[in-house]
Amino acid sequence: MFIPVSSFSNKSLLTYLLTYFQAERARKNTEAELAETLQRMTELTSVVSSLTADRRRFDAELSSSRADVEDALRERNEAADRATRLQACHCLTAVIDN
Image 1: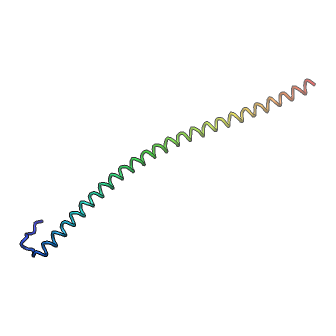
Image 2: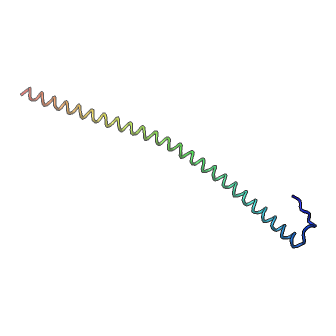
Image 3: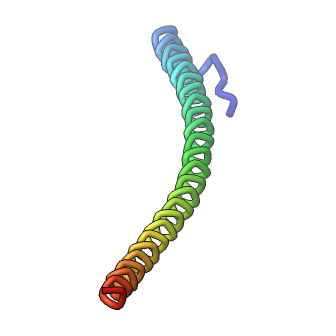
C-alpha cells in the first residue's frame, strides 16, 4: 500500500517511519525465531524417531531374554524331575538289593 509522503507532517512522517522500521525489525526477529523453532522441531523429531527405534529394539531384546529365561527355568525343572526320579529309582534298587 502506497501512502504519499506529502500527506504527512514532518513529525507524523518520522513517527510513521519509526513505526514501520520497528515493525520490520519485529517481523525479521519473528521470522528468525520461527526458523530456529522449526530447526529445533526437526532435531527433536529426529531424536524421538531414534528413541522410538531404540525402544523397539530393546523391547525385542527383552522379549528374547524372557524366552531364554523361561527355557532355562523349564530345563532346570525337567532336570530336577529327572534327578528326583533317578534318586527314587536308586533308592528302590538299594531296597531290592538288600
